[in-house]
Image 1 (cartoon, one colour):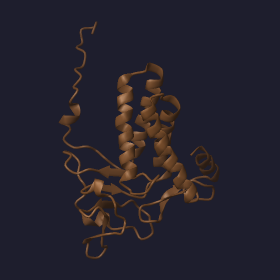
Image 2 (cartoon, helix red, strand yellow; image 1 turned 180 degrees about the vertical axis):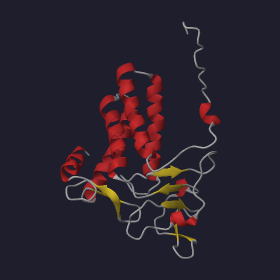
Image 3 (cartoon, one colour; image 1 turned 135 degrees about the vertical axis):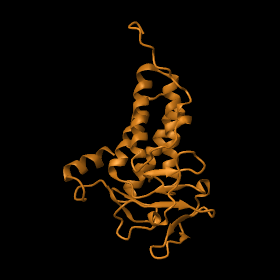
Image 4 (cartoon, helix red, strand yellow; image 1 turned 90 degrees about the vertical axis):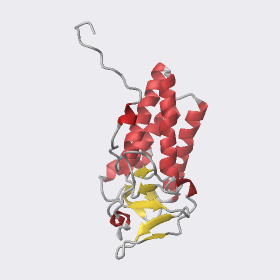
Length: 223
């Protein structure tokens, strides 16, 4: 630098130096916002790196939807096995389903490819009838996704669909948007979780609890 200070060194492998990742219930929101930022970056600069970033982030979107086993339904958080710095919770209590769908609970995918939860009394795990998730054996995810989480997904996917001319990337975004649209239409503008129950804060229609009717009406129309 002209003032005598040294320019900061850029470490391309900095992510490999992370001791622990801080993952949480809003991972999908942040992924969606990052996706949207790269769509705008690409629209202005035509940056090949922005396009590659979108491919990676769209794969994250795909995985977040597929692990739930429900078309159009994202998870709040997903944790793959064998990644240093992040792991599924070991406490069985966080896998006990909420009886009234209040509070977010973890679900793990067993060796049989089925969603597994823990018993509230014995804390032993058992497989549910929600199966066909063989791609995610050994993973876990956090359920009870909210409308706030979906704002990030909708922003990012729509930005890609409207601003990016790469057919593969654009079609991937449109495909996910179509699944979301079909899901909310089929479930009366609510998100139905993997266990067949509406999520606590995933209701985007006037009259639902959690937000003002006008806000929910605008959100539902924009979705």
